[in-house]
Image 1 (cartoon, rainbow, N blue to C red):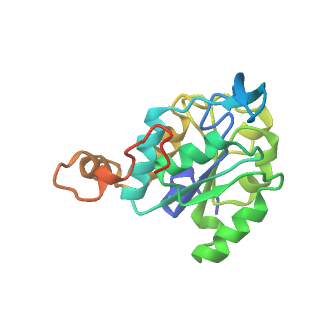
Image 2 (cartoon, rainbow, N blue to C red; image 1 turned 30 degrees about the vertical axis):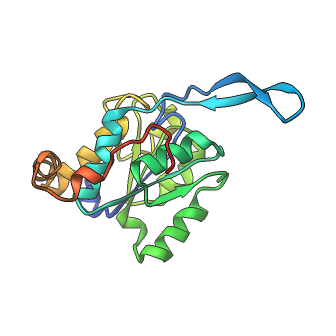
Length: 204
């Protein structure tokens, strides 16, 4: 029997995301900044990315829905580390050319099956995970090869609310989206206020 996207989404316990082109619009800004090494002033390049606040809220909604979230990306970037700390992501894997390896580590650590993992991607490097996980999601501006193998394609583009689309679809399939939203905005909820209070890069 072929499972529907909703059937697949109901099983999900862990949601994993690519970063560039999924949590961002794919743009990578390399900014030259002065750097004093103790004797001379030189210039070094600093990488910058833009993230979507709606996607950040979605991570908290997923957590309120009993799920864990993480990122798997080929690039190694301090901006990814900062954003991951900001959102208190449970899984952060950088420098991963073959993304099934960290997925297998997560499965062993968390005691979950592939059917219980969702993955959101945009490019061909994401296909191995998407072909194996329980619920494969492509962002609206993903490569055609990626969209063709997805169980769900988000209405919004990467970095423009695609992660929010994926999480809300899963929560809606589970029948708990509205409950999670109400818990998130409930002033008496002792958990939700601490979930995503960003510090703007302050690591302390």
